[in-house]
Amino acid sequence: MRQELEAFCGELSIPYNAFPDYEPKGAPLTFCSWRNDIDKINAGLDIVVLTSKNEGTPVSLIEAQASGTPVISTNVGGVENVVEHGVTGLLAEQTDELKMAENLMALVENRSLRIQMRDNGWPHVGERFHYSQLTSKMDALYKRLLNGTD
Image (cartoon, rainbow, N blue to C red; front, side):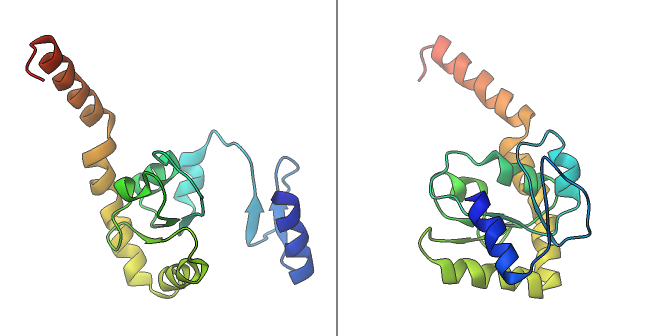
């Protein structure tokens, strides 16, 4: 929907930057595509919003929380396994546009809530998704299977 969104920005007179022809204009909005420097991007964000209709395990939300960025997302697929509602981010049902807007405004208008969720982000995902946790769990699973205890 990028073309439609860019046209909508034009109708509303909202300046924006766009990749791949990115030229910083001081615009409040940037449309981009695949990026390899997501750690730098997340470091400069205040809030990450994901509006997916379907998700598996949303790595973008794990990365955002790991960088201390609170998230707002639709509660689809594996999102609720990644985001702790009210602790590291805010969730809304996929069809509830009003709740998504309310969640966004809650974070925009409440700096202390953003800070609280920022501070909760890394401990939350570090405990569940850090590579050391994943490899440890995989090792334990292999050992249980090899020993026939599972």
